[in-house]
Structures are given as C-alpha cells and as structure tokens.
Length: 46
Image 1 (cartoon, one colour):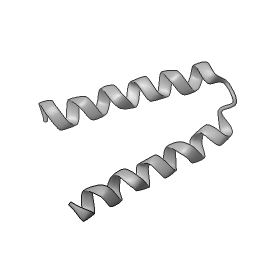
Image 2: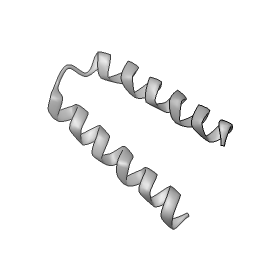
Image 3: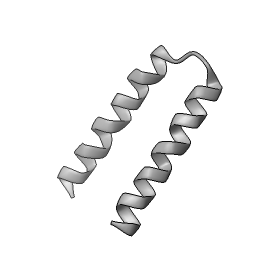
Image 4: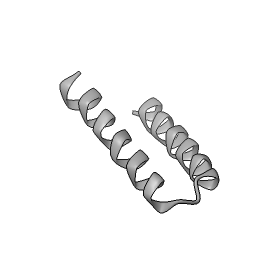
C-alpha cells in the first residue's frame, strides 16, 4: 500500500509541474481527461 501511495504522489507531483508550463486551461483539461482514461484502463481493464 505504501508503494502505491508513493507512486500516486509522485505522479501527482509530475502533473503539477507540467501544469506550471501549460497556462491554457483547455490543454490542462484535455491532459487530465486523457490521464484519467489511461488510469481507468490500467486499473480496471489491465
């Protein structure tokens, strides 16, 4: 469980750093939607 929480925290931090460079909210929403879709597929379908 600790490894999973660490993994999640790491990728949240990566996402926050990426959003510092993307000032457009539309780009941020698109990236967020794509990552949610990928995460769903990996967690439930993989």
